[in-house]
Every structure is written in structure tokens, then in C-alpha cells.
Image (cartoon, rainbow, N blue to C red):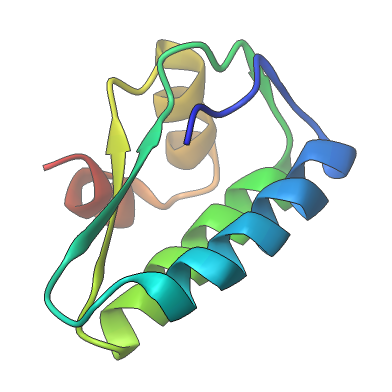
Length: 91
């Protein structure tokens, strides 16, 4: 899935719905990848959705990855003190 340029509250809701389905559809020990290369704006609710999804995937022995995250995405995770989870999601 390609994340939107503007990851505001509305987009966070859309991504949440998509990630809930992806969590169900992704087999154990498999990876679901989000292309974060075009993210130009991201709000705290959108970061929270991504964090919650990553933790949900981990809980079910699945992996959620952020591919090619923009500097905006990296800065948002850093500003919220979530650098370690960000690095896990981008490995």
C-alpha cells in the first residue's frame, strides 16, 4: 500500500481500516509493507495508527514494514519518542 502525501486524521482512519484487513490476511511470519516514500505531512493520530498496527502485527507473529520512509515520517516518529519502533519497522 502507498501511504498518502497528507497523512492527516481522515487518512489515518482509512489506513486503520486497510491495516485491520491486512492483519487478518497476512499469514504468520510474513511481512506487510507500506510505501512511505511520498509522505509529506503526518499527524500524531496517523503515527498512532501505524504504531498500534505494528504492535498488533508483532503480537500475531507478523511484520509491518515501512518502505522508503520520507524524512517527514522519520521526524514524526522521533518527535513522539518512538525511534526504536521506527527502526524496527524500517529494517
